[in-house]
Length: 470
Image (cartoon, rainbow, N blue to C red; front, top):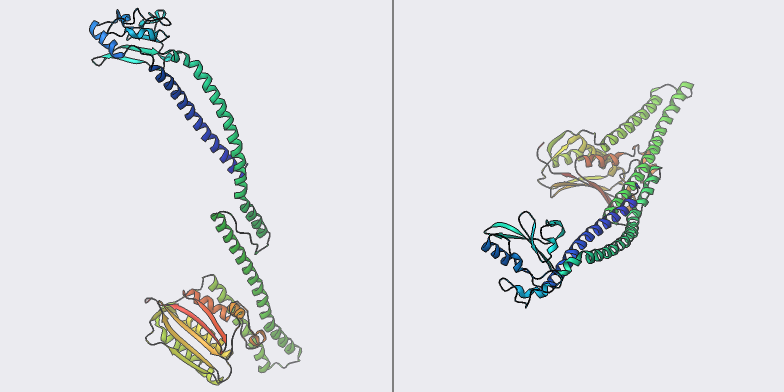
């Protein structure tokens, strides 16, 4: 009973029953009243009873009900009085018609019947619950008695009405049963249809829980279920990508650590065994490996803190032009030694940026070092900066090398290398560009790579928001 489709089916059934019950009550009450009113109004066209106004006038004139029988038609079930002229106010002519069986009752304030065309009722008390319509008689605003007029149909209506309402109730019960069954079938079908995507999603969640990362479900159903399915697919894809990245990083870190550790261990063992002399030259090799290990560990730590948003930034306001010229000046001697032209081309009057100067210098240094490493002799590296709306766009472009679209998509992944052997020989840890991306994102900017083969060039472009002084 805790299943959603069962609850929806029961909800459909409950709503159907409530609607049927409400309609049945309204129809039964309305039909009963309308039926009674119709019959009474139809007979009122042919039967004329004594009017309340005549009775009130009689009481006002005589001060009592004695002798009021002269206004009434003949006894119930018989003809009216005499020649149809009758007694009192010329109303007797209706007696012949009332003789068809109309019943008229007059009661005083104590509800004792003082006059009636049915003499057996005189002297008894009026049962107000037995008559649906009782007229109060009053003189000068003071009640003086009660008047009951029943046509023959009114007397016989109780039995006919009961039979009619009984048949109508039976029909309503049959209709209610049919509608309830139809509601159950339709409700169960709709509930099953509505919950089918949820059942598939539940199976996919169980698979995800069991470790099947990347599980995808078909998007079908209502807008809410579609949004839930899309969110699940995105989450599952991200989890699979994250797990793949974690495994790749673990394997890459192990691989990167293995090389310097093996070299360090080999040199130390050779010196301990006497194969290598214990001199400065061989100790320097071991020391260089410890430096490489330290740099690798520090890069991993830096990237992990940046990804977790736990890397503090000491922001200050500084002209964007100064950041670029400082980085270019530091790399100018290295570019000269590599026979590469390094050109700074920042736009004039660049605004202030509020940044962590050391971290931005780290971004520029990593990008310039990467460009210098992949620029052939007599090539050119250009650093361009310009304001774009509320950001500063800095572009570091080198000639002579290019990346494929697939390489551009992975260039910021940790430990990813376009030229694995060449990059490892160059002494890099494979985390430089991944760290650059995290540092740019921490400053509220974004970074991307552009590349083409004709002419061959690669450009790393990143933005920094123009900010107020810190």
